[in-house]
Amino acid sequence: MKKTFFIVLVSFLSFAATAGGGEKKTTAVKGVITDYHGEPLAGAKVYVKSTDQIVYTDFDGNFTVEGLSPAQEHQLELSHISFQKQTKGINLNEKDQFLQISLKSR
Image (cartoon, rainbow, N blue to C red):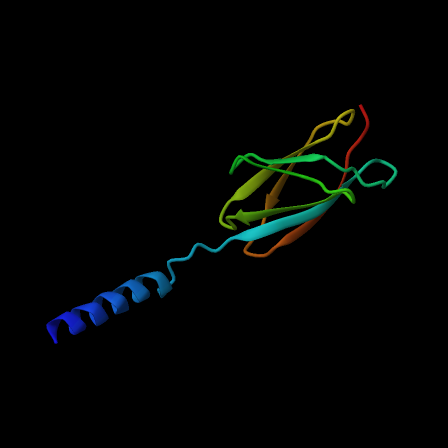
C-alpha cells in the first residue's frame, strides 16, 4: 500500500512540475529576402545575434527563425554574396512577425 501511494505521489508531483506553466513562451520570425528588383535571394544568411542562430533562405527567398523570446529585442543580420549586409532590429511582442527585406547590391 505504501509503495503504491509513493508511486502515485511521485507521478503526480512530476506531472504538476511539468504542466504548471514552466514552459517558456517563444515566437518566430518568418520572412522573404529579395534583391532590389524583387527577385528572391536563395541562400541568403539570416543571423540572429541574440541567440547565435543562423538560417538560410530557401529557393524562393523564404526563411523562418523559431524559438525567439518575445521579451527582448532581436538583431537580425542579413547577408548574401555581392549584396550589402543589413541589420534589422525586431521586437516580437509575443506574436510571430513576417518581414519583407530587400538587399542592395554592393
